[in-house]
Image 1: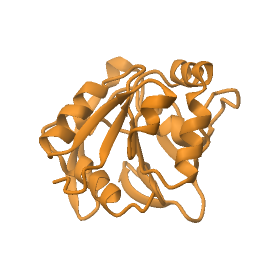
Image 2 (image 1 turned 30 degrees about the vertical axis):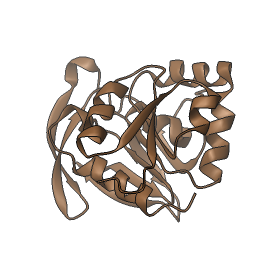
Image 3 (image 1 turned 90 degrees about the vertical axis):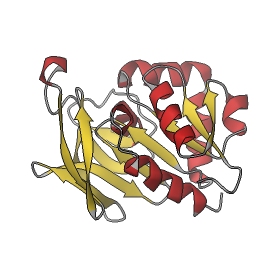
Image 4 (image 1 turned 60 degrees about the vertical axis):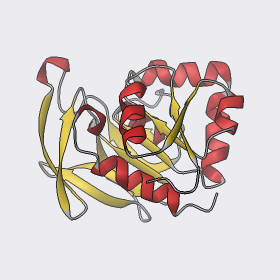
Length: 195
């Protein structure tokens, strides 16, 4: 439950930001859609949802929101990326040096690593001390982490959940299930944040 009156921003350029919004509001948090620099300035945390990472990177650059997000991350704003959001937070994308990213987490990711859209699946994923439901849709995974990056979750020996300070990324879509534990984890990060 949000007792601090902090607001979670949902990057609303594409992807299923509305599903994330419903989960956080169910947990008692204020939310706001973010499409501009002014809207980003009004929120205390940011969710970067799934979608198409190349398109998202180009959109962010076109409106100048990429540099604003990078600046807020450096100031300590908690950020949570799911699927394409994980790709956007990564510093490197395997075999795609031209892929636009925010370059915030010291990780390398592989795009569409679990297969195409038709190969999407749902399964149980170890997360923290429990198991959560994970929906994988053209999902990435982390192929390299450096010191300072905490591995939170693995599936078939592939890293699918990581945290680096105020930044949190997962390869799957918890917003498409009834399980709120992944969102609650990020909410706790916000409560502990000093930004």
